Length: 532
Ligand code: NGO
Image (cartoon, rainbow, N blue to C red):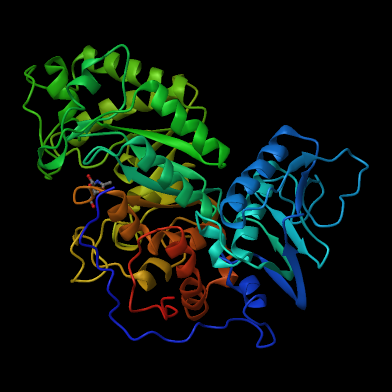
C-alpha cells in the first residue's frame, strides 16, 4: 500500500470527547448509545459491566453457521485481547457457563427477524454474560458487529492492548430497515489486488452492509477471466487509467472474494457494463465493435464513446457466454448489466440490445440490476434499477416502479464516494457536487425520489468510482466517514435519523478507525475527539 498525499491534518481545534445519551452513563456506558448504525432500541443498565477476560469462552447454538459466527467473533477479539477465547457449541438443553459470550439461534427472537430483511438480533449484557439471540446466523453476525463496538476502541488494535475489556450492561434490540445495503468498488478504472478487495469487504461488514457491487468492466479494463473469451482479461485487462499495468481476477480469485464476502454475510453483485463502457472488450475482440475493428486500449477518463455492435449475433453470443460463466460463479441472485451512458445508441437500438440482455439474465435464473437508464427497457420480473441521478424525480424510474421494478438508491450528489468532500479535497471529482458528511447523511432513501415509495426501495448503495483512486489509503479516505453515514441510512429506522446525534456518535468511532489503521477524512463538520 503506497501512501498518498491525504488530507490527514486536522483543520479545527480538538474538542472534548462527546458524551451522548443519558448523562448518567460514563465513558464505558456511553458506548451503548454510540452504536452505528443506530439500533432500533437501546436500553442501558447504568453501572453494570461485563468484563471479558482470559477466562471468557464463546458458546454457540449447535449449528455450523452459528459456530462460524462464533469463530468470526473470536478472530475479531483475539489480536487485541490476546485471550484464547475458545469457541464451542452448546447442546440444546445446556445452560452456558458463567463468563461466556453466547450466540443463540432462536427462531422466535423479536423483532421477527425471520422475515425480510434478514438480520434482526437481540443483545443482552449483564455482569455475568453476554447473550446474542437471533433467528438466523446473519442476525448473530450483526449482533457480533454491535458487540465489537461496545468494547473499547483498542479492540481494533492488531497487537495486544491492555484493556480492560469492559462491555456496558444493557439490551439492544435491532433489525435492518432495507434488505440491500451496499457499496461498489470500481476495479476497472484502476485495478485493485485481492488483499485490497478483501479489506474493502471487511470495511463493509463492520457497519452491517451486505452487498459488494464489483464494477468489473469498463472502457479502461476488463477484470474477470472468462474461459470462453480469454482475450477479454488477457488483453482487455492489461491496462488502466493513465496507462498502468492493470490486472484481472482469475475465476479462482473471484470465488475467493465471493466466499470471503459470504462469511461476512455479504453478497457479491458483479457488473458487466453494457452496451457502452465496453472499449476494453472491443479492444480484445474487434468482432464485437460496430465497425468490426478493434479500437486501441483506452486509458483516459471520458465516458459514453463506446458500444458493442447491436445488430451482430456475435454480440449476443458474447453476452450469453460472459453472463453464463459469471452466473455460475455467483451464488447471489443479482447480475448487474450496467446500461448507463450508452450515448452511441439511439433509444431503439438501446432497447433492442438491453431487452435481449435482460432476457439472457433471466434465462440464467438471475435478477437484473441496471443503472436507472435501463428504466425504459421492458419490464422483467423482479428487476432492480440503481438510481444515480442528482435530482429527486425521474419519470422513467417512477413508471418502471409502477410496473414492479425496485430501486437501489445511489443519488450521485449524496452517495458517490468519488465526489470531493470540499474544494480542497485533492482526490475525486465534483460533477455531482461536493459531498461532506452531512450531505451524505441528511436524506431519507424511503422518500427521496418522487413516485418511489419506501416499499419499492430495495436499499441504498454508495459507489466508489476510481478514475482518481489508486491505493487502499485513498479508497479508505474517500470511504470514511461517508460510507458509515450511508450504512446508517440503509440499516436504521427513519425514526432514529438525527444529524446532531449522528455526528457525535461518528466522532466517537474515529479512535476505532485509527486503531484499525483506516485512513479517514477528518471532516470539520464532526467534533472529533483529540488524538491520543
Ligand atoms: C457515472 C458514470 C461512471 C463514472 C462516474 C464518476 C455512472 C453510473 N456512470 O456514474 O462511468 O465513473 O459517474 O462519478
